[in-house]
Length: 426
Ligand code: GDP
Image (cartoon, rainbow, N blue to C red; front, side, top):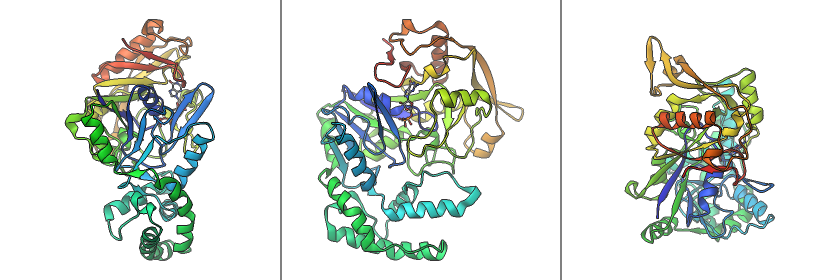
């Protein structure tokens, strides 16, 4: 049975949640490999919309084991709320497992995230203020030893870790930011009830995953955010603090690279990004606004309006290579339904040079001017299409262009938010 990575090709919000949910119908395990509660994956089931921040997008399939692996960050308060919300809608969430090694986002990480963003002022990097950056920083800092999921099992250990952390963090909070110190016992009391909800599911997930591999199970490794938000391969510094690229799936789960059979790259039919940073194909005019409204491009976690623009073939070509994409899922194709022509960036002009691959230095990207081809639109609704032959020829030509740019076949096309609004290539 295959091991598949689901990875976003752009700046996140590609619709990975829907794709993972579809794969989970057949999968034995879905594993989130990085990121924390800054992710916002949406799964639509009939009239019901589920927003998932931490829990893998396979959770609505009770027979599918859903693992939050070593590379993820757990916020017990967010997780408890998310679980409660799902349980109130009939989803038991008993199929969830949490790595004992996953680092924990604590209230002081959120406080530091807020203070850091405030202090950056106009130079803010637009974090979601969910404490993700500070928690990953603590993970690499190592001392004092940060809270990991295993520490949520024992009140004494948790208290001790919080005190040691706040002994250092309060100095930073007070002297660097001039803010009020945090009280260790109050932080413990805030986290402990949620920790108890989580603790039951904390386990050695690496052992579970390796056993599933040995049992030849169907495993989906689910990324959050997207390629260009990767700490190393994204458009630094406007990136996240983990590794969404497909390689991050190995680091975050303990699965070796040779065990991965397929890298399923999720490509939104146009491009969006949240917050600052380079965006060569951004359209700040009326058509960009049309994409935002039709695509409901407002953040799942923050509600922030997303910047919108056209498909960037240079970014796509590069992402396909960085991730080693073997297949492509195209999402939100229906958002382009009304357009007479659709611009697709096929190369950049950088000075006198034509550039086919994304430069790595953001200031070079800033200088790049997109070179567009204009493809004919289909100008009819495609939300009811269920087979490739139902799609208008112009839509098929658009998908062929994506496959050509990615140098990988398109095997799935999403034409609306719900599970049924999906076209599988035979
Ligand atoms: P993710 O973080 O990559 O899972 O993406 P988000 O959940 O942030 O954003 C995707 C949004 O688009 C969600 O609201 C989905 O319900 C919705 N969506 C997913 N696929 C489609 C599609 O094919 N068409 C339309 N119109 N919406 C879609």
